Length: 184
Image (cartoon, rainbow, N blue to C red; front, side):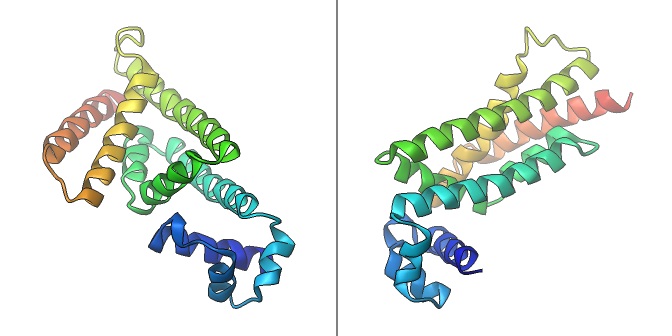
């Protein structure tokens, strides 16, 4: 119970205030626990961040698997990639990873898993649409979907919106093309 409360508190702080605000004292305060308990469960803050990343990623992969199993997997993955909290937490973890090798390695493994899910869904859709997967590599289609959503989320943080409508429209057109082909 306390371990989960610690992870919940750390996630809330990370999401709302950024990684620099996450300290054992603040996590304990938000969790309603004594700070010694944070160090009982997590010997270092690096251990806490790694455990939190793994927990966030497992929730994310559950959502990815559900999206990939839906009637329109590419559209469901696209919508999921545009959820505002996912890119925000990801950016915080990437910022942390620049100084923490175990986090960097875990994020790289996670990105590889994500690309496999997107590529599988894109490959299926492309084949059903009668499009060549050598001309339109599924992993590239998946990277475009995920990449566009990440750029948009980063731009929003910076207060930019130039090109967003066109990029979203282009992706929606591609998804419509692949969806129509599925139904025929």
